[in-house]
Amino acid sequence: MDNRYRIALAGNPNTGKSTLFNTLTGLKQHTGNWAGKTVEMKEGMFLYKDKSYSMIDLPGTYSLFSNSLDEETARNYIVFEKPDLTIVVLDGTALERNMNLALQVLELTEKVIVCINLMDEAEKMGIKINEKMMMRRLGVPVIKISARNKTGLPMLLDTIERVISGVIPCSPIKITYDEETEQKIDSLVPMVQKVFGDTVPARWLSLRLLDGDKTLLEELKIRNGTKEALS
Image (cartoon, rainbow, N blue to C red):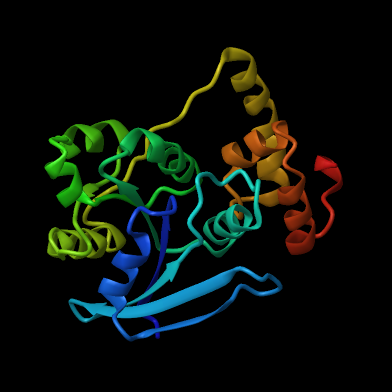
């Protein structure tokens, strides 16, 4: 279907990510394994305002640095499959611990919604979250919800539709590093763009190359063939 949009659902373990997935997709889902991997893949469907959405529940991970098969799988889907939108689910009772993954996703793709879940628990603990300030600083929509109580879901669904349709623009914050690292990134980006074009985020790939991410290099070799310029 031409109007079916793909949404990746990312988040740390125990953030209620799968509860949100089940709430939105209901029984319209199926489970299998990612191609060539033992990692479980869950995909579900839902309709909103006459649009059809396919939601992929990515493995729960603490980062996208490919330190595990789950992290590698989640990273590869966002990078290479290029979903129309990525939703990062955070635990409202432990925002600081969850922000690492959110910032990594923002380096990978522009169309992102940060979804702060478990707000019912956060409020019981007296935690107050200024989502408007977070939105200004991160450059993407930030929505507070409680997936199990189904509060905040109408706002989330409306924001999904408006981000995908371009009504709400996303301008993710640029993560900057120390001067030496930034100089190395600047020197690598033109080479990466020449070799891969816009198939992979050039700045992000330059960072991963500097970090010596061997699993990413192997994945690029499989998908694009050996790239002599980067070997």
